[in-house]
Amino acid sequence: MITSKKMDDNFMNETMDIRRFMLCLLKCIWVLFLAGIIGAALGAGIYKLYYAITDGEISYQIRDDYYVVFNEKDYPNGMDYYNAYTWNEFSVDDKIVDYALEQTDGVVTKEDIRASVTSYMPSDYRVVTIVITNTDKEKLLAISEAYKLAMPHFAEAVNELSAIELWSCGDITVANEHNLTVNAAILGAIIALLIAVFVWLVYYCMDGRIYVENDWKKLNLQIPFLGYDSQLFKEDTDANIKALIGDNKVRWTADVKEAYSDNESEEIVLQIPMGKRQRTAVEYDLDLLKKQNKKVVGVILTECDECFLRRYYGKR
Image (cartoon, rainbow, N blue to C red):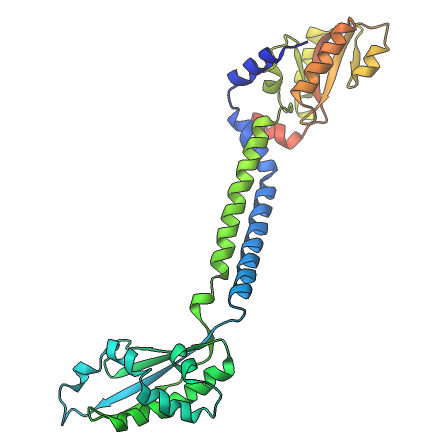
């Protein structure tokens, strides 16, 4: 029987058959794509579940633009004081918040307003955008409507401003900071694909199935490879059989147990299904046949994948 040391030496001395590697990869490429799809679904699902547990609700936003008219006649430098930083403070100042609260009829609290409202100046110092964010659409709309009254009222209360007019009303949208489902799906797909590729590489390295003649040669058993039971290689295989076996009486078998009971023939041609049997299993069978005084004069691969062989050998 072939010793484990010899098997280990053969394994360590093997070189990678790139063409075989790529063809085996192509055969299971659908598995990698499926892993990516499952990973994307899991990534999105886990994100949605995490978001539901931590926040429980989706945050919504409304962006309303206001046009500020400065009292430049009496306060020519007023626009220097009302900049992006100060507007963010003024938008939640008591002068605006208290008046807005009065307009909501108790739908929201003062803390709700301050937690929901931010502001910024897009580019023009005369335009202020009030951004309202809340998980409750009713509160969101109530605050937005209240600010449409509170902002003009604020202009009346300070000397530097002549008026604040509503310039444009925004629609309710989902807040961007919570719209990360696509990101989670992409990350899940990448992670799943990397794991699938790693698992497949490990499987490929451990896989000792016999696909082509080169796999048989790696066993170094000095038993002739007769060819493939395939229309693509029929002429070559028939020529090898005629040259190496001729008219000798041999038993063709894929089952070594059948060969044990055959007392008439001591010469055997072993038929190995392509890509279905491990080299270690074939080595074991050959060792058993040797103990039964059966001589294996050749091997042939059966149940061949014509497409695989055509691509491997570049035949048309």
